[in-house]
Image (cartoon, rainbow, N blue to C red; front, side, top):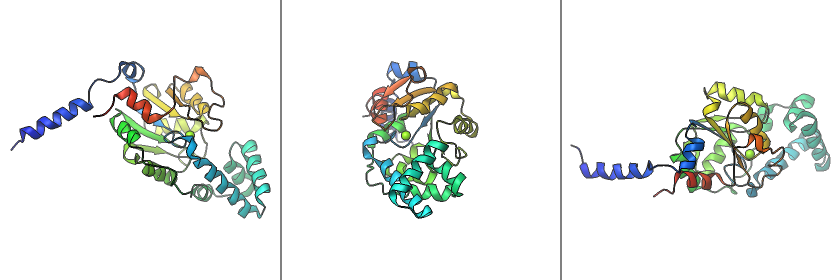
Length: 247
Ligand SMILES: [Mg+2]
């Protein structure tokens, strides 16, 4: 037997949830079916300083690997970064470091600086389309951060540094692999990212680009208006503004 009052309440709830979006949203993003989000310093503010903890573990890893002091480890870390593009690339090439071991070690950081973000979770849930996480970190760490933020259930897919064949953003190789892997049409995709330079290949591939200007170190490095369609400061706040406040 159908419970009419229950159905009515559900319909009212649905009508509220599906009420018209802000017209700006429809005109700029109405064609988007896939949303590609960066993780670190994008879904949470750069002020949490998580990357400092990862950076410290990279130094400690090199100290143990080479039996050197922190100052020498730092020098090696920076030298690899500048010579090979990433610290890991240099360690693999010159010291035969196993990438899985390195990445899981440096990402074994406490996440007590991350708090659940109800506004972000709620608005990701109301955002129409598929959500894909695209990170230069590894998948186990990314899943831990998503859980700590309380948004893990909203991401249908996750493309990590191993899926990108260890070619970190902004190397276009990982972007192409993502598009192929999940059958994403870049003309119907938007990418949300705190490192401006990582939006350049996204734009070149045909995506709509959103830069999260939230104070990341070197976040504005390589910034150019030609490949940034919209600048925001907080993902949850922006989505709430566009989708309307939930009731
Ligand atoms: Mg980031």
